[in-house]
Image (cartoon, rainbow, N blue to C red; front, side):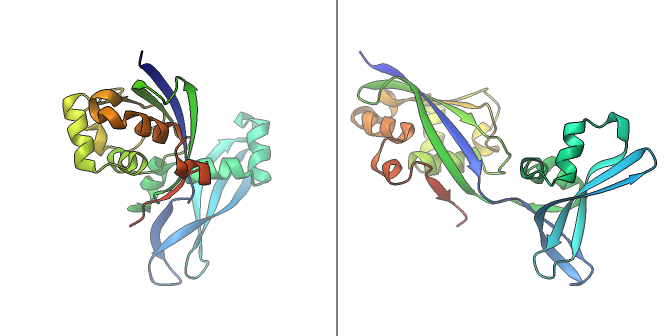
Length: 227
């Protein structure tokens, strides 16, 4: 009897996004790089905090607002400590907030360099019928889902579209034109392995589960799709 293979993919972007901004020192639009440092300024009972960026060419600074005129007594002590201690996790979370970054600049450069860690939850890869892939993405990466899946599954984007149209690949939650949208945390990809790949279903299952030869060389499977 063919089994259900359930796999979790933890997808981690490796490079921080870079906002492009006018640089007064360069007199040109330049990419700005996150420094990982916060600037905190308190005036009376209110506090401002920024994440500091530096021009990639001249080190000119730009401050990305994190808190603006916030009452000091409304700030959680843990958050205040993280800001003053330049907590790396907090800096990374704000650096990947593409929606807020886009409010302050016309262009945010995202990178397709990803580490994908695969974990098999249930099932085996010997005789699978269906694979369910749960996507966990702690930070937005700005990468289209079809491009991401094409690289991970070793398929062309036209082949992915064909599978989606014939029911061989189902995306949950179902949204219009989901393949052309960004990869999102909480998505589930259901692949009908037997219908889509027939005799090659076990090898595709091994690839999905990270148990093929590529994953044995590098379990994190670092992917660079910047071309």
